[in-house]
Length: 158
Length: 209
Image (cartoon, rainbow over all chains, first blue to last red; front, side):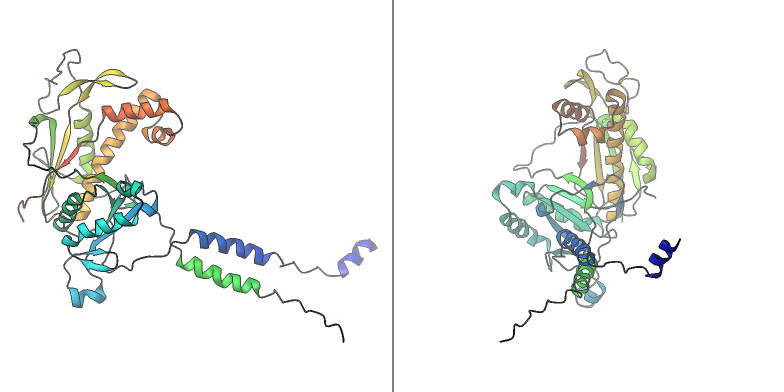
């Protein structure tokens, strides 16, 4: 009995925190590696519709984005509320799409130029007129592999 | 000279610095993976060609107007009913499988069938179905995606049913495993051949509005 009592009287040793930095660093590196910084800042309101039959977009480096929607609140004073096309960081018209496609193709390796997916990020309230115009321009520029960006949902409603 | 002891750098605050960085990356990280409906646009034709004649009965006609209303094969329906209707049309049923041109005589609104060479299965009757989609300039994008989604869903469900029936695995599973063996790849091709995705989009007109 006395043996135990002696040990107990010493008090519990503090938990060593020496390994804490290592653990934190491990987490840090994980997030550093997985982080993708936003390349463009959105200038249009962009709420993509929901769908059930979605596929994942593979190979981010081979995806180019085209945003369509109303200008955000802060820009509505200058640009109005009609839906607009955003390419990279600026509002563009549909006539600029051909040049945009060529520039995006130039950035990639020659072998991968035909594998680029053009992701259309269109706000759900947009009317089809402007979307069709963009699609026709993409056809003219021979950018045929497109992807309607949608969020996954389990069920669609009327 | 007195020997000066090199004092150790205090590493106690390293954890704090690491935490700071960690929190920064935690906040800036966006984990969302991009998802969407994949489509292929038809290439531009050099000269205007006459479209090949297609019999009306082989076409599943979908019209969407500016008020987001659906007219399918002349009937006004809700978007939630579209999937079942499309499935019925795509699958239909060759009523006279022995007749070489198998005209699906019992039901004049259903598509015709054609004998085709299909891998794995050999000769099979394949439906000549085409889905034609026409929307208005005033249709909302949300509605357009819903219709697209239902059509893709109809094809996917039919492919899954067929794969389950013939191979005991769903079509999605087959596609996932298709990289590993050639025989599975053949099966995927066979199912694609029986239910090919034929969605034709007409140039939009101004209907109504």
